[in-house]
Image 1 (cartoon, rainbow, N blue to C red):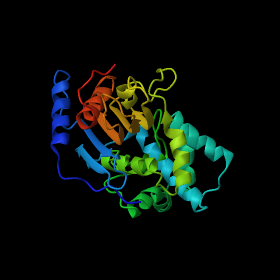
Image 2 (image 1 turned 135 degrees about the vertical axis):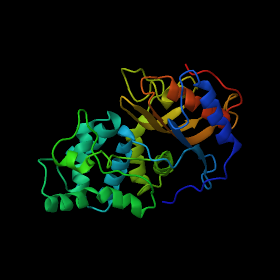
Image 3 (image 1 turned 90 degrees about the horizontal axis):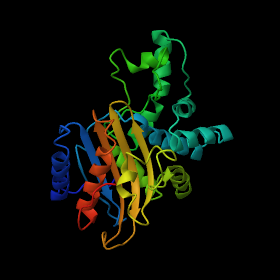
Length: 302
């Protein structure tokens, strides 16, 4: 499970980023308010990677749930986790519905920890060592500049969970778009744990880019909205959003067409901050990047 090797800085990445900045000048988009990574999988033996601020750690919102899913399948494969209907229900709801409650159960099972009252310093040190197990797992695989040890919340943590965040929330989850793209590309290529495990993860990530908001809230306002008018487009993705962030990580397949003469297979990860209410920004960014790399002429996002 090795990461794709970055290409040298490309004019494509620079051009796409300039277009994004120009497109959202009126919205006062700042250079440090977004990041993206694209992995072109057309040549599966030598995937090419490009991006803007790809190694910048950013609060990931619910996108982090894909890391917990990947860790769960690793532990299932090694028999560290028992495969039960309740675990499977939680894994499904964590990804398909982005349930925070389901994610809490999965992370507890991965690390042998539970929430509760504050702990003494001695007890807390033992608890924190266990909770950081997911971090150690991914660090051992070469993932850098990430922190994946916190539960997502609807209202906020209490007790030892709040204690673990630190007084200034300095222990919040963090991901880079490069790390997210690496993980998703390995799942897409059926290389995470095993082909069978990767297929199970892909099944949960499968989305219909033509779905209405009422049918799938992780399509409208995200990368799916950028490809919904492309006949035959297929998508596997996990989105995340808060009052301040709007993120998406998607594996996309586009058929050969007049617009995309080579077709396309790629992973695209986009993180945005401070513009979360703008549901047009992330899809427009995605369309600009896709057109710049694979298309022959830009088209508006519908």
